[in-house]
Length: 458
Length: 100
Image 1 (tube, rainbow over the protein chains, first blue to last red):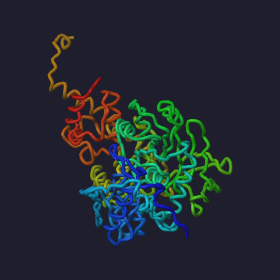
Image 2: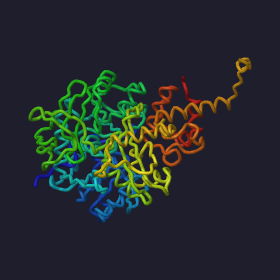
Image 3: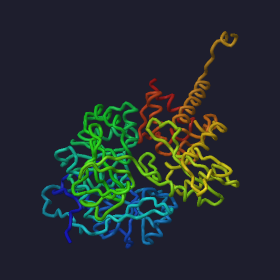
Image 4: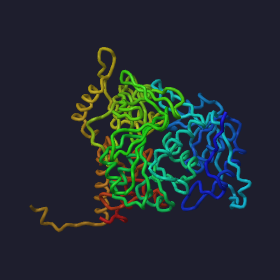
């Protein structure tokens, strides 16, 4: 079986990360990987919860060299942690937060007391670990309709192939020596690929911080060498524009997690003078297509990836996608390597880039003791906010509970971004003869409630 | 009308309360919160428990105060723990930092 290097950096002094304006070398990274691997307990599964992107990458490297698999759920509520523990009973949590709330055995990340000194003279000792391409590197999870997270296995070879394909699609001639700043977490599939694996496999550098406010993004970019790449989402790009934020010169902006409106893409390109590449992918397939949204509507598949569609359902196969994998979106192939994207299938929801399904959310809501019947639905009456986010709503039948008690219980089960706004208490749900709840009926009931309880609807 | 004949009296306390109410209304409207502005406890935490806001809400609030008062929030601001402790503390920060 072939092996692929942990990092593409070919000399000890090559920069692999930036933190607060300071550089971290590839040699330091490999030292940190070895030191952490030596401290890891025997369990074969690692929930990598490090917030700092560099520490996350060290955790990934240490897991890979010691044959452990990274566990990357999309959210970390107590209910999800309980389910992950059932899935992998030997899982432990690697964290850089001394007050980490995750209820699993914890390994606290510690910085080396004295960073080793490295320079070019030590090049002879610089040895990059080679990882079997067939080694199981990570399990990423989607929210299953039965209420339990569904694991998707990722081998090291497929992950590396995916980001090497990505490099061929980026409109930047050479990333070497450049830096990649991400506003998305390393644990999210897109962030994992484009802000951790991409710099590791392209001899560029990641940025340890995850800037949040528009002014943070500008300040963090200022400290980075060029070429500079910003890896972000429609929410953060809209926020940059809404805040009228000036940015230093940059070579490329990448967006994913949710559909990017073409007019926002054009505004971002014009304002920041850089191409904006939108990436399409899913947790199941990883990143697999891209387009220059300001200029084109067709998506170009990544090298070797092909679509098969019938009855409105598409699956992807080839390239880094190991086996035919069903896609949750409605795609229309227009050539062997191009397609149009027509949105998501009805059950899926995407709030500020976080994905779930109505079936999963309904399962969690109905599992709360005292809830007799309940349903989430997508509102179509609320205006999008400044950051362009529209929330979900829910109707609940629970005579012995009040709305705030249900919200408290839900908070332990689902990501807060999906908490309903509003949550309406009703006597019964408007189920049709087959027991189904048409979304338009739910919206009609909400509209009625909006007239009766206007204060619930800002 | 007789009320208009009275001299307008504003004190720092009155100004602070007015700003607090104004921000509460901007937040409830901007975030689509299912409550009325007057229902926000001015001493309760904005984040997590209390008003129950999440990180997307905090980003929305950053955009609101950027547009309305010309303030750019920063994640590395040492004062953030105080600023987001309550609506009252947040309003105080806005009154100190506003440029419009």
